[in-house]
Length: 133
Image 1 (cartoon, one colour):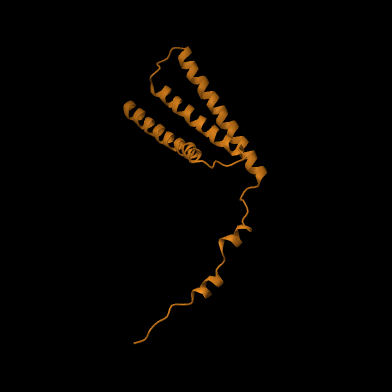
Image 2 (image 1 turned 90 degrees about the horizontal axis):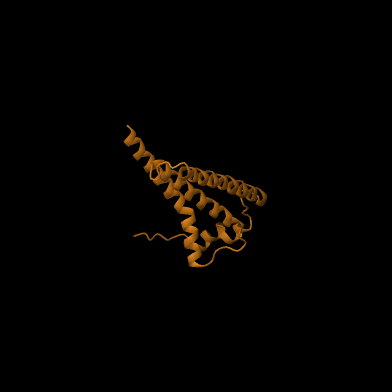
């Protein structure tokens, strides 16, 4: 019977590079100035959307339209979505990262809730179109 041997582990490790040596060669895909400019643009766009939707909701109240309609629910979901996005992008200006478990939970909420709100908006649109047709 022939006994097969495994290749030497030391030889395998000698040919591979470690993550620590590659860490010094990794660079961000965007420069800091580009990242900062995009963050400011996103905050301005989502802030303007928040103000526009907020004004629309006040106009519904002022002109005494139906308060519980597809339009008001849709606008309210858009308002919450824009608020989450403004807060999320505003946190990029924070100098120290969040290191507490509560902060990680809040970060997860800020990143995942807008996706859930988008899904809820899609469901609302499907319900509206099914009622219309």
